[in-house]
Image 1 (spheres, rainbow, N blue to C red):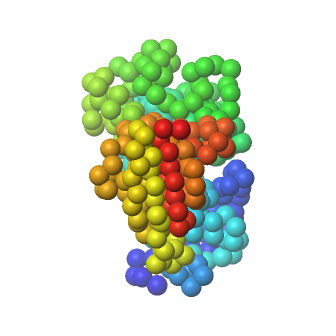
Image 2 (image 1 turned 60 degrees about the vertical axis):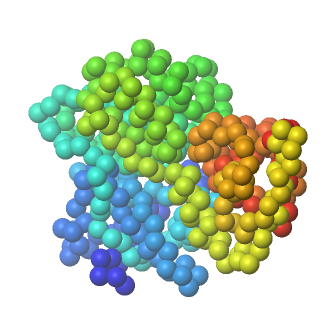
Image 3 (image 1 turned 60 degrees about the horizontal axis):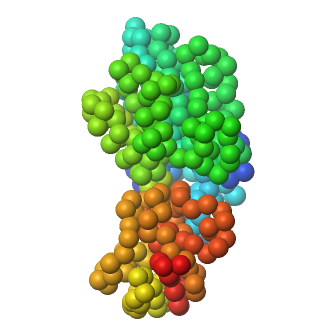
Length: 358
Ligand code: FES
């Protein structure tokens, strides 16, 4: 075991949705001091999974006020650690855990009356929950507004805790849920956060001039949209705090690293059809997304965000198989019809044919 890690026993595992768990740890007295943390920080966990040491960082969703060490772990496709945590870990299991770290917080000041705002998507809620709880409990005059995006109502992580906080701090905490794959009655809350929606939010729900700090945690595309919007509105950089959580580049790194052995030595023959022209080239399987691979081969293809959001790089997969890293843009019927986001599609078959004209 590395000198920085301590062995901690898993105290409890609770499901927060069908594909995510909250793991809490027993904290022996000799580690209590070194494991003191600030709201918004994370733990790095290490386990030996099928003979291999796998290490991942997860934000604490508990508040330091509770003196509890809890992380929420969402199962991600090909995620070795997250799958292990969701499917195999049991109370009593022992994990190597590094003491808390991270800078995603502002200092608590019980005398201040501050207005905070937070934007979270998916598992990006974990540090945000810790931050909200800590500020509401420690700063009796402060208030919080949370804008939280998920696919549908059953995928909302930590909903019980959030609702519990809302009931406890009714006049100081508001939650606005956004769903991307389920219809809500109010149009504003349908789909991901866009600049237009942010305009509406800051006209009707929150007054930008009144906000002291903004916290943002989720995929990089969401963070950049909100950050750029706020900066353009003249918000001070020192009031913006963000934590990249499930960035598509992270998802790519994880997938490539974890599927190395499975696809080693295999190549993929790629055919790209665009504007009536055809380009063919070869790349190692599970090595690169189709868009970047084609651009490297002098293709002239449409793209914008490269983060799985804008759908500019959408194409139809006519043949072959890909691993789609993240998808924040394509609807279920488009996926069923065979459309992919080429900036997120990693080839995992001998032959791939994609058509941008379809
Ligand atoms: S370039 Fe935006 S989703 Fe691919």
